[in-house]
Length: 103
Image 1 (cartoon, helix red, strand yellow):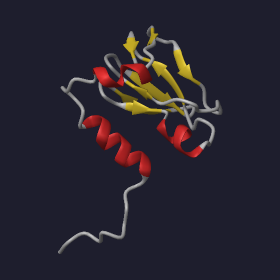
Image 2 (tube, helix red, strand yellow):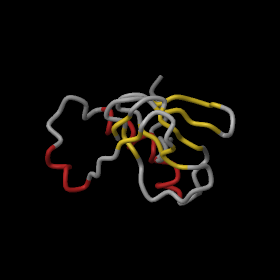
Image 3 (tube, helix red, strand yellow):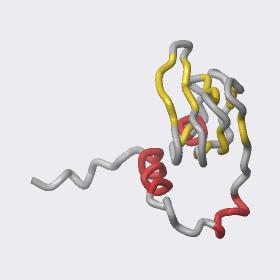
Image 4 (cartoon, helix red, strand yellow):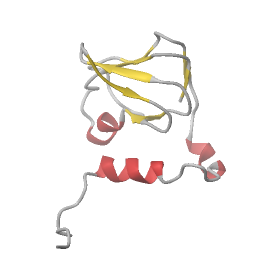
């Protein structure tokens, strides 16, 4: 049975799949659109309720999301913050670095 082609994946899911598909490729053409940042262990990337004008892709390190309980972890090539960026809604969780993390 073929999947129903009229059902489309949400935009953020398609975006995440596209980013994950870039692993190991030369991404130098994207550099003008990227800004790198780092967080030390325990530092906050953003707080629940903040506005979302960016998404973050983990280059290396590890993040955790809290709502206030811990609800997940994000590692290398993981994406965080896309929901707020794509919908305009406030951040749904606080995200902190578990160890030194480059985004």
